Length: 73
Image 1: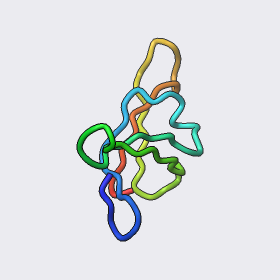
Image 2: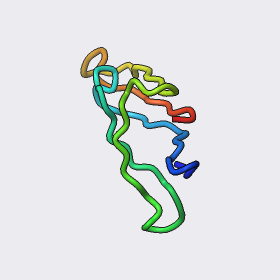
Image 3: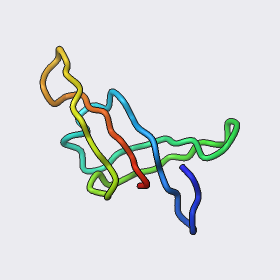
Image 4: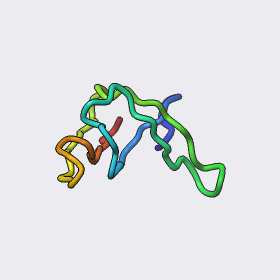
């Protein structure tokens, strides 16, 4: 996550995210700088433009596990 104009812009992905296809929000930890203090917690609405959710085939059932991509969120 990069600070830009008083906000953070997030680019990257989360893999093995349970039930992301049904979620309304995403709890996300993102690197914002170097070292231990360089991580921030974000609560992101899943209908935010730039979020793409793709299912990962699984043995435990269809639609349970996803990968989530963040493009200029």
